[in-house]
Amino acid sequence: MNRSTRREFLGQVGAATVVPSTLTSASKPKRVAAIVTHYTHNSHADVIVSRILQGYNLDFKDPFPKLKLVSLYTDQVPAADMSRKLSNEHGFPIVPSIAEALTLGGKELAVDGVLLIGEHGDYPLSDTGQIMYPRRRFFEETCGVFRRVGKSVPVFTDKHLSWNWDDAKWMHDTAVNLKVPLMAGSSVPGTYRHPPLDMKLGARAREAVCLSYGPIEGYAYHGLEAMQAVVERRRGGEVGVRAVQFVEGDEVWKDMAAGRFDSGVFDAAAASRQAKGRFAGSLREALKPAAFFIEYIDGFKAVVLHDTGAANSEWVTAWSEEGRDQHQGTVHYTQEARPFAHFSLLLQGIERMIHTGKPSWPSERTLLVTGVLAAAFQSRKQGGVRIETPHLAIRYKPSHGWKRPPAPPPDRPINGQ
Image (cartoon, rainbow, N blue to C red; front, side):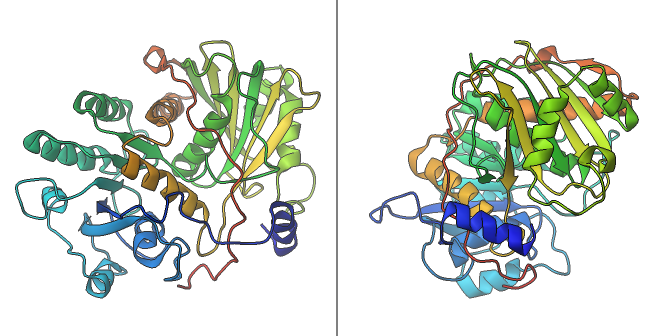
């Protein structure tokens, strides 16, 4: 987002402010263990866990979350690691195993919640080209401790549950069986929106178009999840997905011309973008799309248009619903500078769950999106065939209504502190 557009955005949502805690001043901090792939500047470990140490705005000032980091496990220690320095400064131990992170070397749980951050680091690719982050291993070892001590505490696992469906389903089912309050996902569904729109709860909606960009697995996941947080509000709630297909290049526009998705909804998504004037001509002419076509069981349909070039740099959801004359569209805005305030909004949801024992949004959403993403990559591997997904008949009711947050605090240099 350029400076003039950002000023317009801030003017519409109000003066910049810090993000306050969602808990009362009487709430006592809960003890948490953080299990991370690696801990470097601006990594997800930094922008999530460092908020516990440095405050919600990463400036060592109030407000602070009502959480206390009591242990850290790092799966990898790259040259740019910052965890050892933070350990010395803040006095928390870095331990050699996940089990010790949860028990601090004792026989019982020593924490009230667990953060699993399996993002970033040097890990191999699967046969579908997805990064095989050790998210299942992190969760499996965590649940091994729960089984041994006969007690569970809330667990947050960052982004999609796994790169493959089998692991994701195992994680979800294991949480249900062990009665683990489980929450997963990314910062994008709950972040700022411009304009501040949501689908009406119970709307008779027909279809949605999502614009996405960046690395195809990690960023298309953001787009999918942000869109799902909108469309799950349609009449009847979420009922699951019947089929997924990956299509790319000019075939996407041929599908639009044939009516596979509504050009008017696409135009609403294109019109909602913040970053205009970065290319000559229309977005359609500039976009190099890799599309995920999604057929829902109730007849709703959606497409994620992921830009593999450089024309788009936003996550946008547009949709059609009865009762609104025009198609609706909104940008899921993330602050691309320190302190990355959208992660404050994510941590607020995590903080709420650890204090209440109740997930702030449904884990079924993340399970469904993980399955859609895995199916799209399978379709891509097989040359773009349509993949039927009877395993994605996942029903749930939306339990997390998006609320307009206060404006983000002022930008700081992305490589600064």
